Length: 336
Image 1 (spheres, rainbow, N blue to C red):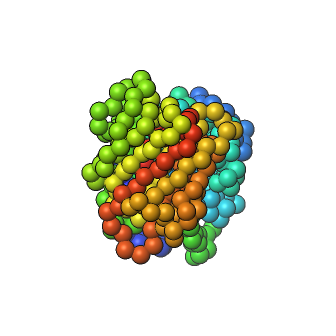
Image 2 (cartoon, helix red, strand yellow):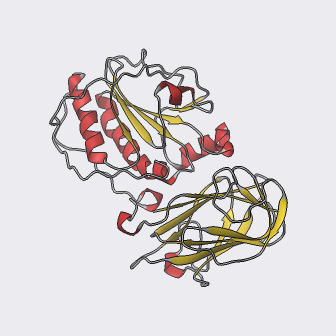
Image 3 (cartoon, helix red, strand yellow):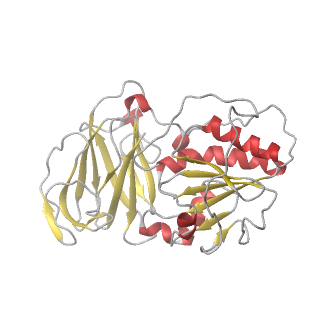
């Protein structure tokens, strides 16, 4: 979930759980949204007799990304036994409304289960949902029996899937899904996670002396922990900060193992170069998936970029990203 990571330490490995799952008072439905990917339109009535796991997600959300390996494996393992995983893509940022971008994210994520675009949040409201990611467990009679907000607690989630499948008549073995997360899917280092999500748009951002919706020249400064600042000519819109000159940067002080930044170009298909430093130096072995050891990278589309993944002790660091051409848009920092 954005700004909240839910990790419960209970380990459940049996088919049955300690207490029965009661039905939740939700009039859940899947109709009324937009385009479907990997499937014709589906309804809970059509899926009667199936166990349905509904996942609310958006593709630039790191918390959602870390949930996807489990959804893929559950769909693979339990699909033949009566489970249907459905991704409800509800966009956080405007660029995530574009079906072409969602389709690309689905391909890159190797997601082969049904996904529906919920750009108007129709299904979101029907489930009375409040956050990304969120899982809703629907039994064979179409009743929501449980829900989880936020990433983590995967053993509990799988246990509930197995219980509902048994209720629906499936015969299960004792073996559970085996997921080995890596890359973006690696679980966050909660013991060292001291930085929250930070937005650069003026609607939710915490930058100092921001002039909304107009070009302003910002002087370089060293921000305090969990604060960011701009340098160069920038136009700060509601969702993002856009570089309006040929050279500009964003500085941030953070405390986390991983640092991600949602980025995009003004013009699709025009890659934009950037360079990052940590405490004034190239990242070296702390380079994330989207930069090299010298800190060089390219904005190739609208998505989340992993820029830092530290190895060894984690401490408070100064991060800077410098853009070498106008037209870069920076949306939000997230951490892990």
